[in-house]
Amino acid sequence: MGFRNKMNEEGSVVRNKARLVAKGYCQEEGIDFDETFAHVARLEAIRMFLAYVAHKNFTVYQMDVKSAFLNGLLEEEVYVEQPPGFEQKTLGDKVYKLKKALYGLKQAPRAWYDTLSQFLTDNGFTKGKVDRTLFRIQDGESIFLVQIYVDDIIFGSTNKELCDKFSNLMQGKFEMSMMGELTFFLGLQIKQCQEEIYISQPKYTKELLKKFGIEEGRTVSTPIATNVKIDKDEKGKPVDESKYRGMIGSLLYLTAGRPDILHVVCLCACFQSNPKESHMSVVKRIFRYLKGTIQYGLFYPKNEKFSLKGYSDSDYAGNIDDRKSTSGSCQFLGDCLVSWF
Image 1 (spheres, one colour):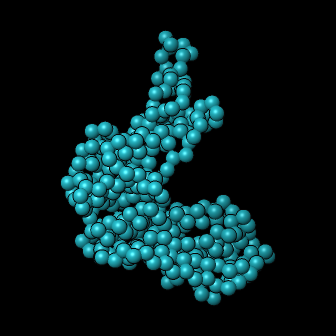
Image 2 (image 1 turned 60 degrees about the horizontal axis):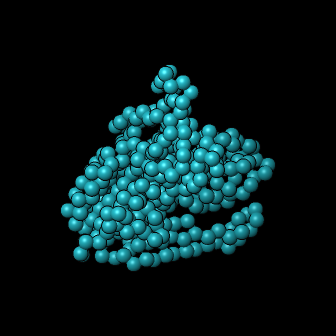
């Protein structure tokens, strides 16, 4: 059995889940499964989706498929033992043959994606040629968009009636939870206002500060001092490698909505194999910067502009150790920052 607490953007438990989970780690490739890759939306795609929503000035809604993987149809033969605590002694050593997927199976995400994708295309939706998790349908001058991430679905339209039709369509096929206007998705807190869309990660930031014990102490105004140059520091004192990697990994996910820390986080990520105290001090400074800027995020104004613009820059031989240059770029759709590296 698998147990999980589903939380909202404020960190409150909204549902307790209990699932019957298959032992997917016992599967053998070539015997139990073939292909397991399933398309999932990239964060850049979500930001582009929201930028387009701001441009067209319509509301985005969210729905959740209950026990989504249980709807996925299996193409191969899969057998499972009787689950502990639910054995039927009269059946002896007999096993179950699955018609649909179970949580834990390696092919479960792909089976669900194929099932949902086929259902949408059968009902007139067109799948994106580049982003295979984006589906659209044109109804006269109205456009309807759907973006899927496993069992989470966000959708919106310039015509509110199309949203109602889609909701009824999905509820007629799957067991759904309608969650109203989009407020929390993939760790991003999204506030849809009359004039703009605001994307931030304060809940996740607060969790990081608490997790790594940096809730107290002073804050700083920049993620890294302008006169600091990070190098290997081969003579420096080593620090806990696992803790350093954990901090870097957490910060990398935070860059989904915080481009202001991306550069320094990537610099610190270069020294995960042998971190020193000098590297750790820079990482802790990032956290102190986050402590004073918890509410920072992305601002997507609703206006007529939607042209693609890009900016790039680089230093020259800025790396102290190997004299390599560091480059970076960002892309805008109108006035909305959608991608950076």
